[in-house]
Image (cartoon, rainbow, N blue to C red; front, top):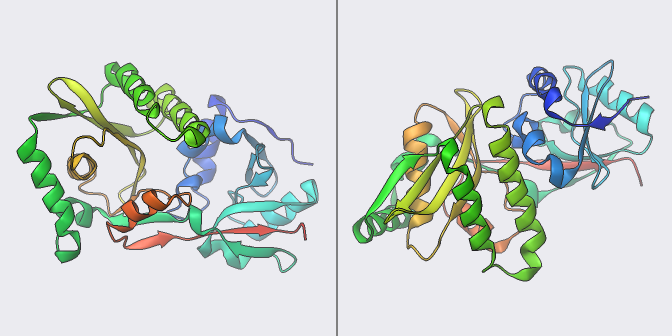
Length: 285
């Protein structure tokens, strides 16, 4: 039987070691995912003969095993747990799902992946609106763009708290989960290659973003929070941050849209180069 325990900071080196065994651009399989979303997903971890396993206790689902023998790892997981539901299975690993499992696409969890060159240059007719938004922002406001420092953390959390008051009350739970994720990100800042940026207008912080360089191939945008009363601010911080921090990284993963119509429109408006397609697989039927 696999012995699952609550994921903690002491498990970070282990997760970093095993994450090298699964090759995907999907962000759930990068070590920082467990640290950031531990509270929201109630993540538990176990090691076995064939791999490392992450379980979301909140939903009772598992990520695809971290293993260089994925077929054997799935068999080990099923042998231990019996009924198994795998979530966020990268499309490139579907071939290892046993025939006894049923599968279905999780479109709402697909990652939006862009070339850094596209997000920096915003070349072409399709992205002309983004260039115009940035031009309008720069023309309208007297702003400063600075790297995010540890001394800015409290201010970021405070402005995030202020902005959540204007959201739909039905979204408060997910907003609070995201806020806790930002706190977790700050708390484990030195454990990963995190960086960030902040925009100030008249000395007031009005936007911040947090990302992570995984390798020369991939960077992830974890959070992007902006006061939308400033026109063009999202386009401005996105372009500024990537151009100053990830110019030499090939791909930028801006994560999923979780099925929110407005978020989907925003991510699609940048015309992703590819989607990090994800599937669910279970043997419960």
